[in-house]
Length: 98
Image (tube, rainbow, N blue to C red; front, side, top):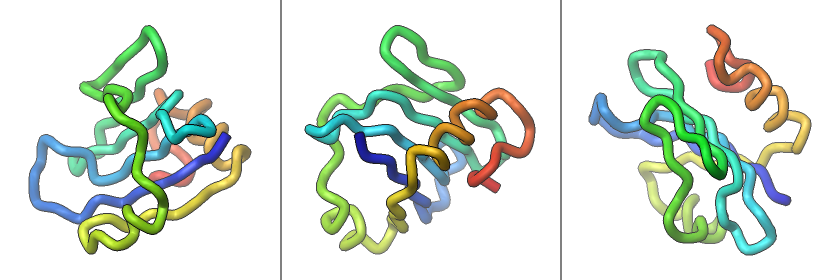
C-alpha cells in the first residue's frame, strides 16, 4: 500500500482542497478522505461514499506527475498518518487535515 496527501490549489468551492488516499500497488484508491474549503469532509471506500467523495475511476498518476502540476502539492505519508485521518474522518478537526 501507498499513502498520499494532496493539497489542491484552486478557487472552486465545490471541489476539495485536500485529499488523503490509500492506494494499492497499482495506484487504485482503496480509501479516501477529502476536505472542502468550507471545512466539510467526505470519505469513500468500496461500497460506501459520504459527503460527495468517490474513489477514482482510474489509478492515480505517479507521484512525480502529480507534483509536476503546480495546482497540486502532494506529499507521501505513512500508513499511521493515513489511519489517524481515516479514524477521525467523522470528527471535527481531523488530524493532518487542518
